[in-house]
Structure formats: C-alpha cells, structure tokens
Image (cartoon, rainbow, N blue to C red; front, side):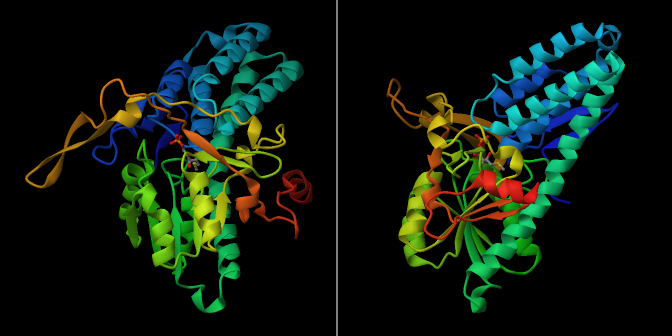
Length: 379
Ligand SMILES: CSC[C@@H](O)[C@@H](O)C(=O)COP(=O)(O)O
C-alpha cells in the first residue's frame, strides 16, 4: 500500500494528510467545509496539482452532504451557493489548472442537472457522484501514465540499457501530490515495479523542499534505490553519472506544450538538453489548459519571502530527528526576496508529454507540441 494524502468516504468525510509536518509526523486533518479546503490548499497542507483539484471537488461533496438546509433550498438558490463557494476556492492558488478544471466540471454538472430536474437533491447527488468520479479517475489516470511513460522510455534508450534505467525527478509528484500513485513518480514507480529502475535521483526542490521532505519520503517508503541531490548539483550530476531521463510533473500545460511546473524545472530542462538526457513531463489531461496558446499566459504564483529566508525541520537529538519542529532563519532579516513558485519550460526543451491517453511527441522538425491535435485522435 503506497502513501496517501486524501481520504474520503461518503458519510465519514474528507481528511487530508498535513504535508507541512512530513516526513516527521503523519497527522490527518478533517476538511468539513469548502472554506477549510481553501485554507488547507493555500497553506499547502495539501499540494500538487491533481491533489488540489481532487480536494476542491471532495470538499464540495462533503459540505453539500453535511449542510442539511442546502437540499431544501430552491434550486436557483442552491446554484448561487455553489457558484459562490467555487469562486472562493478558485482564489486559493493560481497556477495549477487542475483546480479550475474541477471547478468547471462541477459547475457544468450543477447547471445541467438543475436545468433538467429542477431538484436541489438531484443537484447534490450529481455533484457528490462527480466528485467521487474525479477522485477515482485521478488514480486510474496516474496508473495509465505510469505504464505509458515506462513503455516510451524503454523504447527511447539503447536496448541494452532498457532494464537498468537511471532517472532524476524534481518536486513531489507521487501519491502525496495526487489521489494516489503519482504522475512523474508514477512512471518511476512503474519502472521499479517492472524491475527496470537502476536508480532515481531526486532534487531537494528549494525553497519549499518538496523533494527532500516528500519525494525522498516516498522513495524511502517504497524502498527504491534513490539518492537526494541539491538543485544546484544537477548539471554536474548529469556530466558525471549516466542519467537516461529527467521526469517531472506539471501544473499547467499550454496548447503548444509549454509547461509550468515547480520552480527549477526550466533549468533542469536546459541541463538535460545540454547533456543529451531525455526531458519527460507527466500529467493527466486535467493539467492541460487548451484556452492558452503558449506558456506566456500561465499565471505564476508568487510565494512569501519567509520560505526563502527560513527553514523548518525536525529538531535532532542524539543524532536522531524528533517529532519536535523548529524554524530557523538562514538569511538576514530585511533581505529582498524573489520567490516564484513555478517556472515555464518551453516546449522546445521537452521530449515527451505523458498522459493517461498516451505520449505526445513533436512532429519531426517542430519545436512545439500539437496538444489539440493529439486530443482529437484520442477522444
Ligand atoms: C503531480 S504534481 C505536479 C506538480 O504539481 C508538482 O511538480 C508541483 O509543482 C507541485 O507544486 P506545489 O507547489 O507543491 O503544489
């Protein structure tokens, strides 16, 4: 059983693993309302593009179930309540489009059922079912991404190396960032399960350390052969040690394949290109934003300065980490800070985008992906 970040059952409620306390403590927190989901997403107690989208949907399901007055409202009033709550949760974090994908799907379903049935109870039932579907689909999609990515990479490397693959990943894209299994980490999980993984490197992913806190935790938990490196070591690592592919997730992918992902991804793609290493992006279709032509339109979240100038970790006693957390300051007070949470990797630097429907590659000679064209062939 792999780690999980989201627990939900109708009647029991929604619980999120507080990722701010990992890997030192596993504390599950209830999410009884959309307002609480907004707070947990904003604080990054839950994070990762797919996990955010799933959380928003399940929180709506939970609140629709627990507020007994909602199904007694006239359907027009229930729609107003739903719209206001969806608009609020949309303000929690700006970059991962999966949140907005969930919001759009939930709103479309609410309107459709309201129009057809005029029944608030029917609207509630349809939205609870849709939220459960969004949760279940994410797991299924990640498993498919894992399989497609593994198959693509095995074919992309020399045959005599295909069962001894060495990869590098960034940020956290595993069970903790999704409903389960993971996207980029899902591919690595599939390689490991199929005995094709020789080694995985994970970056610390400064400044928020999703790599050292979360991915390293998942890799250790899964007993994969793994090594942690700082973000600044990657070019030298690629020069010194053979790595077949850098595999990352995504928060938003434009029509041409430009990809917003955790800050630092762009420099990894540049290093990969300079060293002849494959650059793979793994994401479900909920991460695609077909409304934007290229990455210049992707909103990039600016994170607070304290994430750069302070570090939180477990207090070490007798050489061992304890469950006591402490925050220390590592830069002078008052120092100016620039802290974008994400960057955009140009499509030109990406070799493959792995989805649950298959792998998107560029036409020979093209610098960009035809995402819309790919989707027409698979849907
Ligand atoms: C499968 S998650 C893909 C991305 O969401 C992930 O790499 C990432 O950038 C997460 O950022 P975070 O700021 O931790 O939410």
